Structures are given as structure tokens and as C-alpha cells.
Image (cartoon, rainbow, N blue to C red):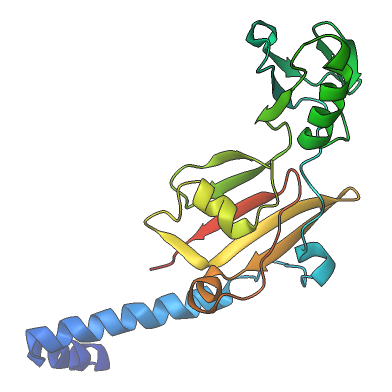
Length: 217
């Protein structure tokens, strides 16, 4: 029978110890995985300017926000209001009041002054129940979905609000997608650095999307 190179190779493979053969096969599989991974096209990420990482003033009310207005001296007036499209809320005894663009504390102070002539105890408390603006967290997190942006929030904090990293998450590959001037900007973050050494925080803007990639291993 004619002996071919393929026949010789197969015969040599069969003579290898079983454990060594398994290790060799695993090594070959890893090498092939690395080869094909290297052939993948890199995603186009934007270099992150400092201006895009910094927090912008937040906490001001806007249309769609739901607020609770409480009256310690007259609890029967307590009400929950949604800021209307025109930026106003309708309150007992004082009627429509402009709320959009003001912080909850500023509106609270204004209302306390307005109720001075209506209530013996004019103290008014304002709290945000639901913020209309939010960010979206998806990918390998435990509770993907919308996170209210009712305070300055970093991308890392948003992931924690979404239940933290999932079982197969890769903290080194987190992407923030931001719509800016009609264009989508993509920023790559490495939370492994954040967990190990801290570093600069990336603050989110309304309607940003945070996507946590899946680990390859």
C-alpha cells in the first residue's frame, strides 16, 4: 500500500498520548479563534474629548417630568403633577405655575412664597417622582432598560443602576452611543481600568445609550 504524507501524519497523531493530543487540539482551536478575531473589522469609535466626559448642569425640571407637591400644613392639597408641554403645572389655589427650567428647590421656594397668603403654614415641598429624561442601558447587564437621569450620572453608575454586569459581560468593552447635532457618536470605555485604578469618569447626557459587550471567552 502506498504511504502518503496524510497517512503518515494520521499515523503519527494516533501514536500521541491521549492527554497530549487533547492539549494540542485545544491549542489549535485557540490559535484559530485568535486568527479570525484579528480579521474582524474594528468598530469606528470617536476619541473622547474632555468636554464630552464632563457633567452638565442637571436637575432642572422639563416637560414630561412628574413631580410631587406636598403641603405639610394642608396635606389635603397634596398632588402629583406632570409638567405640561408648555412647561407649567396646575396647582390648587394658585393655578398654573411655570416649572420648566427650574430646579425642584427653586420651584419649592417660589411656591412657598406664593402660598403665604393662602395657607397658615405656607411651606411647600417639591420632589421629582419620575424624570422624563433618561439613559438606556443594554447588552450584558442584569436589568437592561431606561434609567432616569435625575442627577449627574456616570456611565459606570448607570451600569450599576441596571443591576451591574451580567455573567458574560466584558467590562473592557463598553460603548456609549450619543446623538449629537443629528449624528451618532460612539465612545469606547474600559471599565476594567475604572475597577482597578479609578480614572476619569464619563458623565452621561439625556438619551445616551450604554451598551456592554459580551466577553469572547
